[in-house]
Length: 427
Image (cartoon, rainbow, N blue to C red; front, side):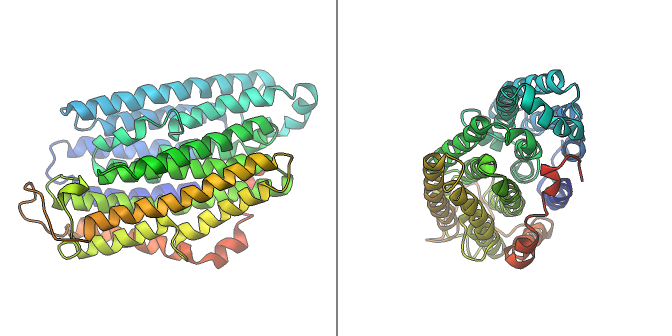
């Protein structure tokens, strides 16, 4: 799992950094941007490399600090400064739960190292089984803040006030994936509490559905993508919550969640970079009601954005199709075992409805932006395709999305991707 996360973080960050070199060209804060950017990526890499909860928390806070600096990068704008403060405060609520969970782990197990905690689970299960629910709910509170789950999701849409490369990085490879990784890494603890797992799935389902419905009402292209991220993160938690249904389902459910996290990182980075390309051409206008018919002006951006939209929508044989399929299979298996058949039947129904809503708002955004009569806002003095430094990462992300749509090698290895999650040591 650690190797998968590192590959995702570093490759997506590379694409975004190349894109940002063109997007931020001429900005007086160029050095400051890349200093915070590099620290952001470093903190996220160290977070996934941590072998204990305390080290993870230190870099968890580092990720939060960098997100504050990058969201509020254009702090002269009141809206950007307010969005940065909002993200900082909301995440502190979740972090309070995370640190309490770490304290309870230390008090219960006498250690915070993953391998030692997981080795002691059988002993604690016989002496104090009730403590697992408290630990897991506190850890999940931390994940709710970092991964924007209802009701702590309110900071993520406003984070669009930062530069577009920041949005791509936060939504694709860093920040929001940290909460998912932490819960997946803690699977041996979570499977000891069916109550906590049901809370994880339930919150994920509520978040996925509400965010998808909200995305349908948005006209700001970046906010549509922001709410889609919130919704897809809910999908991941629905899968993670199904891990406690039966021992046979544990590894499969966690693998399904991590598979979707991997595919989502690439197509969401592609979509945000495409939105930034549109914004660059339209004079920083991102309201879809003010422009349309960009397919001829921005042919490269249009083609790549369509591929990203298709992957997000779960278009057959695209990457999102296979990863969502795995999650739906995990939830379907949850309806047949574990004594919570009715609960997981409802969760499965929400997941299916959300999948259809996702397809609708994905292609709605594409159609409003690139199809129809050609129309530009007044701010777009010379509508044009973005420079090569911005379009090349789009094509690279496309090639990263498309190979993931070839299911053979993934399906053959899907049970080995997160083997370390259900064991005791970091890969």
